[in-house]
Image (tube, rainbow, N blue to C red; front, side, top):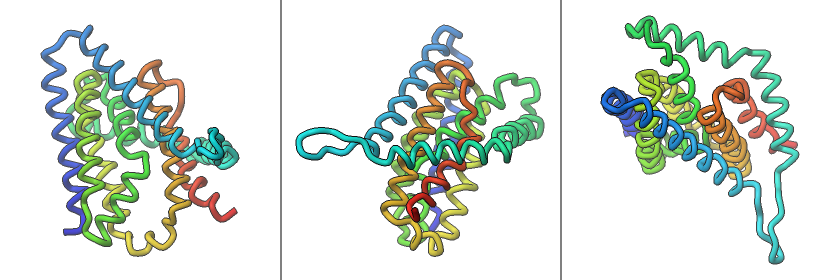
Length: 237
């Protein structure tokens, strides 16, 4: 059944949001802060390990770096495009709309929770590769693995940030569902080189999400999302 992987992923995120909120209401702010820091460290290392896996190569008994020009160019160009399109502001506006429509108008952390969780679970090659495999071959294994990972991360985030985290299921459903729907068209252009670049840049953005979780909103990560597309297109050059 095409799309089953995304359905399971969406349910896992929503369920993690509910369980996390219920658990968060029963623990003190001191423990909530510890959970927040734990989630931040986990996200930082997820991003860092993914980046290093793509950035470092072992040749002739020593490590060297690769793709640095692509990384710099993608982040710079993508960041400029994102600022021009005001993607972060649009994420915030959508989060505020959700906040009002879901009866959470008094939840001061709803928007931050929604944006942070959405970026964490949407960015990365697993979402794209898994959705393509789901659509073409009916192979749900990648998205099932992603669902487990997302469940753990959103559970921890929701316990400290609140209800907004569970609503990250919406952008995940839209993104992965769209990719699955158009998977036959996307597969020919999603070469190994393209996916490596998406994974490379995506891991850096995940690291940036971790920075924001740990030190507050220092980086407008949503405005860097076009860097993923720039990285994919970079293969042509």
